[in-house]
Image 1 (cartoon, rainbow, N blue to C red):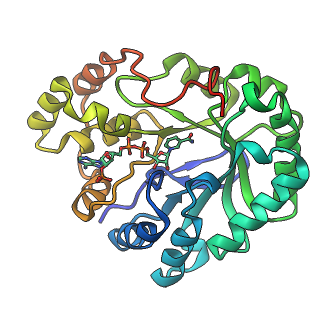
Image 2: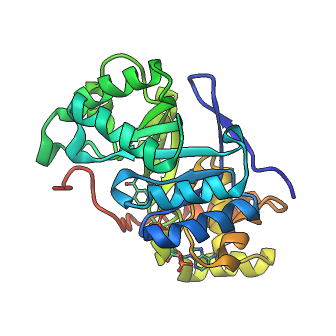
Image 3: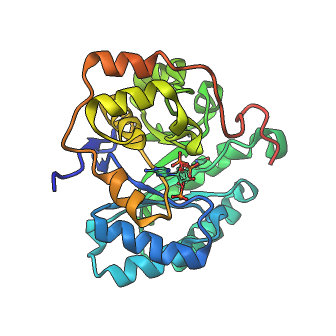
Length: 274
Ligand SMILES: NC(=O)c1ccc[n+]([C@@H]2O[C@H](COP(=O)([O-])OP(=O)(O)OC[C@H]3O[C@@H](n4cnc5c(N)ncnc54)[C@H](OP(=O)(O)O)[C@@H]3O)[C@@H](O)[C@H]2O)c1
């Protein structure tokens, strides 16, 4: 199988461009799903404290028999833990549940300004300490807009994980992050399933002889995005990784680019009140 491409991050590390999402996968189901993914060849797992499945992910990592340096693991700090002491307890709890002594990437999950004000700024100070201590190799953010990035002190986040899929392409934010040297990770890359029924994408899929999900995942890869599809279905887990032996041509890419319609499927960081 062709290897998943990696992207170089500004801190000198690299990240596999295709990872396995685990949101809404209950802890007990996370173990078989992540094991299935690792056996299929995924080497990048995306979880979060709030998903309550880090222990299940950790069991899969242990059972896989893979060396620690063969799998890229991301988890995220939840909104109620932005104070430095709470953040430290949170990363220690995540590491314990995952059964790891360090993460590859630790993210602030949301700026969460409506509920917690500017606490995310202190959380970023804490993440820089965790990185210096070796608890995580890289640090980044999720669901941040320019105003939140501007408020941070010290290091620049190496990634921003945000909602991106063909009908919600986030072109202005992606251009801004590109300008800042921050890589984009696409969450809900299939629109949580909403983009899968799109007739134009189906037409491209038929013309290239691939599934709709595979065409969408290719669109993310060819735009230089890190893409994190989630599935608990073994056949789909394999299908979503089987995207390395074809390319969308410029016309196909343009056809998908034309679908951007502001179809947000998740919360807006500006109005999220959790
Ligand atoms: N940072 C954040 O705030 C944030 C927010 C949301 C998500 N995320 C991350 O992004 C990941 C992906 O987002 P997501 O879980 O919302 O959605 P997604 O990957 O866009 O879509 C997942 C949905 O599509 C279905 N699916 C997957 N592959 C398919 C295929 N080949 N054919 C047909 N259906 C397919 C899945 O069904 P089955 O599972 O039933 O197969 C599931 O219903 C999350 O798991 C999480 O890691 C992060």
